[in-house]
Length: 129
Image 1 (cartoon, rainbow, N blue to C red):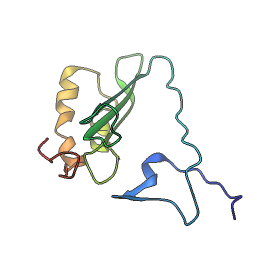
Image 2 (image 1 turned 135 degrees about the vertical axis):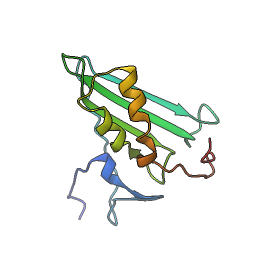
Image 3 (image 1 turned 45 degrees about the vertical axis):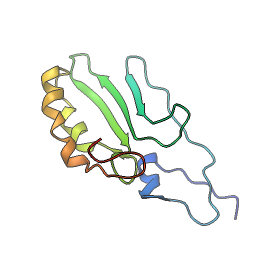
């Protein structure tokens, strides 16, 4: 004991509300965040009641790489506060991947959010918020 280490994807770490993929005695030693390649767009937006509060009402993280022809080559979109655990918007990602990066493409993909999330009401915010 104490000498084993394992690495898992962050999206696999969160199992259910308040439950993570940790075995008895395990702890999180490090979180590895790769530096985005040059030309990759990356942004995170957080809504919270207080600036220094760690409880987020909603958080969106966006990672986008365009191909030389202007189509979406790689996209990752994730949210906190929209489900019981932090979660990727996989249906939205699929709707964007390989498509031209235009306002029309983004608008067409917006409807896919309903497949990915059913917002919840909790101490952070209401589902309607």
